[in-house]
Length: 456
Image (cartoon, rainbow, N blue to C red; front, side):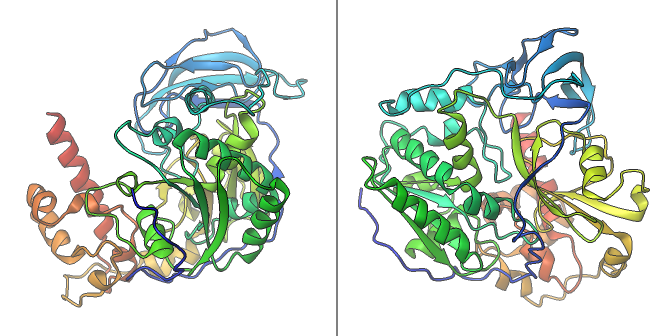
């Protein structure tokens, strides 16, 4: 397969430029205290939930596996704290329905050190062993999609990968967790990139970083210099224009190489695998220690937060506990503010604070109702055929036509003739719509109905 030349550094077509609001970009990562209890939902990723391997009343130590799986599109979970299993039952989730989860009560006097795991020498470990180690670590994409990392790094025998594309764009407004990881954990990131290159067979890696983060590129280039000549191949760090949604893998490939991933195809078809910087930095830290994923960096920010920042949070930490510590007391009435998990463009507003931080939560945004009042007061009007949504859609779709088909419940036509499957729900169309039509929400409903019909 042809090795594409690089580097173009040109913006992809269309997209939008929302205010960046990177309020925490210059603040170092801080550790959030461990809560009295953590809730470990079994379903924290795309794929089949793992099965529980602990019992109520059992003592567990931090890092100990509490749920295992033999299904390839699934990952195990590990105890985020040292304590005792208090219950295994249904708990609320960010999506609404209650789902099975493990509740662990932390021991008050425990140091909460990682006490589980056997250090391993990664120097001579081959690709298959790396994939198994990634699977055992319970790693999923930390950029938000939560796709099992070992499955994404697994290259079919008939395919060949030449380039590992590392996504360091973090184009969502407000979010800075990836930025801080690149600046503060560049050495771990380079180590994780090396493991991913070995697993996929890639001969080079390119970290794409939006040009509003020059300090991140400098930190990564310094780390590459410290690593010296690598047997896996070369690692580059390059800036790309700041634009939303630059963090989409197809948009990033377009910016780096000037080529378009065909409709319905994956980057793998072009000899590339894309991974998030936070994911690979975690691999660089966890695999040599033989540990599982028990924590992640989360951006906590917004107008309703007194102490915004990027926090290292134990998975399963209740949202109430996070908000209390960050200066957004959970005692405040929910109707006085809005809480979003993720970024404002693709994140999910929640109605309850009784949900935990999971592997896919990159940010917690808290906005006061007075700050949201102007947007929430807007009425929805009929489409005026202005074409703003068409001009902004990075996939070149026609959101206006899709929205009208959704209103008529012509879901099959949306999928077959209007390429609904190419929509990755970036929210650009909703953002620019002068009629305030919730287009992306309509598309999510349509996709869900089509999935249910396919299963039936």
